[in-house]
Image 1 (cartoon, rainbow, N blue to C red):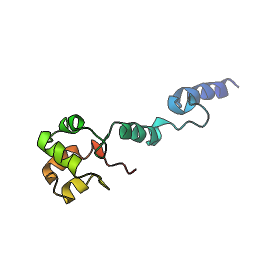
Image 2 (image 1 turned 60 degrees about the vertical axis):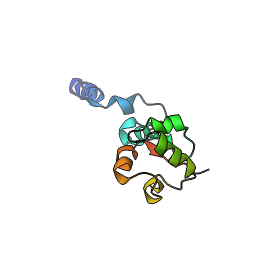
Image 3 (image 1 turned 90 degrees about the vertical axis):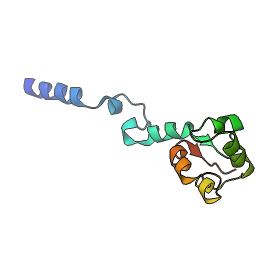
Length: 103
């Protein structure tokens, strides 16, 4: 009986804490869902961003932010390159920072 107690304690101590302490119905962060949701919250919507917000992106200044605003609405963020609003080299710098939300 003592040996089974040792195994029970060892199994409890080695269990990952994220699943052991999670609330019912919660999805552990190690499944990749929570980080994706958090990352999406920080994306800049090119269909509604202000000139100041767009100008803060790498490679986007006043002229390009004006062009982005003038070219709205966008179906997808890659429309910036397809519509010749910005060059691909600039798009590669900002593609992970932007989104084109549909209304």
